[in-house]
Image 1 (cartoon, one colour):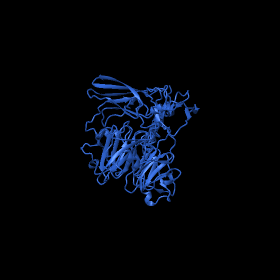
Image 2: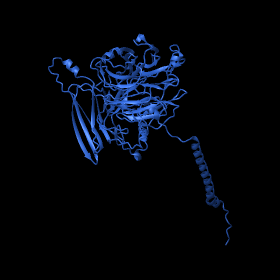
Image 3: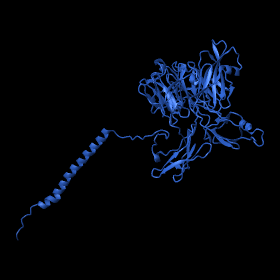
Image 4: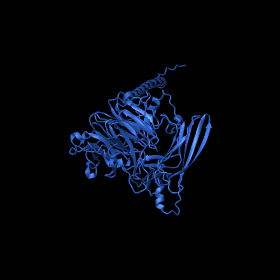
Length: 626
């Protein structure tokens, strides 16, 4: 939904991203100059955009402003008499948040569970009734997952749901197994606008055992997706071989789920990891060109990156594996010491978690809080400076303003949040290596994550790269999805002052002729779908800029700016001097005033006596007689 604010004398307007006008109801208060607007919303209306006239403010144009506007998300209140729920003693923090509302999150520590709806500026403790779980079960949370249904806890192979109304066990009455569940996951990337080719709904979470996969839908509906027996037939494996589910993860595609499978015959020394991807729209399975041999006891955690082509990183306790460009570029992330074992240069600590963002940044955090950084399509990680000691448990997440933040959980059951300057730390850590970005700037005019193209519509986009002469960089277009679009490309090339500039213009369209066809609906179905397209430079580095957002700010004219973000609550603080300083200054001023008053009095008396009193009271002398 796009909200367009015009002049105050005109009324505001709003429209959906599908360019469909809607009706608004508003009240105008001329004294306050405010518009109150009622907007009809659906569940997937999360990101909105304010648009207005092109006016300037402090010599800068006001850009269209996207912001997060969702239904209110309430945290679960603390109930007197309820007991804490936590992970086993000594375990690391477990974190989960909604993909489209990252401010709504939950973290499980080994003493409490904390929930927030404002990026941990405020938080509540999540507690459970005393008659549902035993003491050992309450302190045995293995995994946690945040969903619109509530908070899901995985405890001893059983799934539990905690929300505002109840705390319940999800078992056979919900068509879920009991005591056999080994993992749960949800989507990690936000896709708010997309269409199904047929009538359907996307799942909100995946649940799996060693041999079965279940999908969860809002509100509280669960269905079995497949079994390893069906997957074994799909992969044409021998009936006598052993196939189990290793892990499940949602990909960067809005409707795809990746399933990692353990395959072995003797199952004593090594096992082989296969990968299949399920599309919720077409309801089809696709075998991927992915193969990894690991020791039999190795457990890998996958994360798909935010990209058009499937880009993937996996890690065990010591090593990070990468698979870029649809699994065609694979290997192990190396460090400056030439080793791929991160534990050897982090005091024998193991990998706790990996942080990802929408700009391709990847941070591997060890259990002792040592962190390594690399970027999408990069094969070498750099060790960042240590920020906190190994005695404090922490995790990285994206705050409400898009800033990377560190959350500390202390032993006394409290939280502390602090911004983490990731870009500054990366530049500081790579300063001695003299690493440079191969290009100077990379720009494009893609302003939205999702575009709807109807019959006869065209979409024109451009991208430009500026780089030093003789490097030979170019712009790559990644296309992932059904072959339903055609495109025309044009390239403009300029060179000046030792720098080259390449501009790629692409126009997407369809040339399908629907006139006088035998089966119109079949042809339409075959030419519908979701296509992911990404424009990227051919060269990469860890310090390459993601976007040019610098402005020429006139410090002498406008003064020091306030460091605030419009998406966060702001209460200005005024720096006042101390009470003792103010009292001392007032005392000195009063003393000076009274001193001047006394001196003025004596000066006045001297003048009065000399010029007024003495002349009037001076005795007259006797007059001489002639």
